Image 1 (tube, one colour):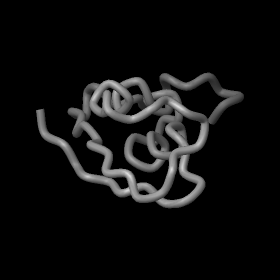
Image 2: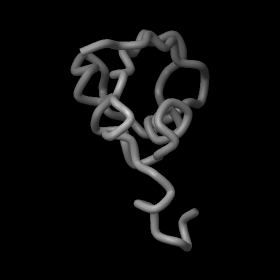
Image 3: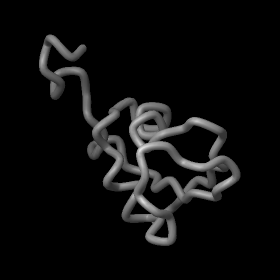
Image 4: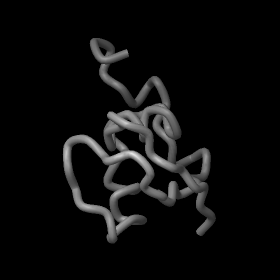
Amino acid sequence: MMFLEHITRDGERWDSLTWQYYGDPLGYPRIIAANPHVAITPVLPSGLLLLIPVIEAEDARTEEDIAPWLR
């Protein structure tokens, strides 16, 4: 599996990272699993090196997968 490297900034959260990289705020379990050395906290400390798994297009959620009221 391929990974991108991300250095956290002050105030970043797991869901904001998954929105940034995957367009899906609920995709954070994938990033958490790739970073077992990081504590699961609501807000990440700045300066952490995180590995962001690169996903295939078919693994990404599309707008049709999201409920209309969440689009």
